[in-house]
Length: 217
Image: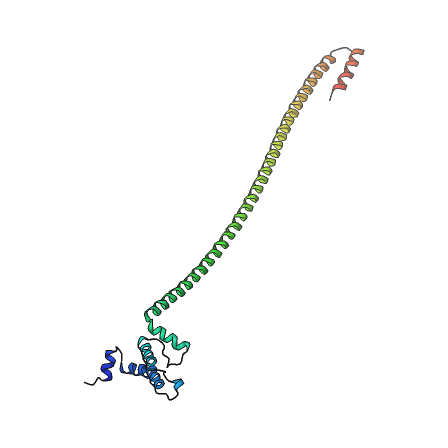
């Protein structure tokens, strides 16, 4: 019973095109190396050919293929596909973690910078408030001193006003006393003149008249 390419591809878990690419690569090189005419470029024995076929089936690099870093890396990835994918995922996660940590570090630096700026601004505002408080205390103390000085000056003015009022009242009293004494003297003088008018002309009368004239205002 003949097996078709489709059936063979299905048995290998692939497609005819993938199977053709797979057979065209290393197997062609193995066949070409086995058929070369130069002994030094050909397999030395059937065992070498069998080993190269075994390496091909095991996914290892074969002697018939040109040995390059890219070829060995491709064979390694094909042979350890799960491990490579897991390592790649780990690397991606590590890269994401590094990026996230870098971003968080930058955010933390920005936050710290803003916090330091706010702290500096707060210190500046606190110092400004303290200066304003000291200035307010200074002006309040000066206002209190000025208010005390004004109160003292007012007290002095009131005291002097009271003293002036007292002196004015005393002057009024003295003037009234002087006026009363003047009236009393005038009354006494008038009475003496009346008495003098009835006294005969004598030396005593003349002397009394001169005395009364001298006291008359």
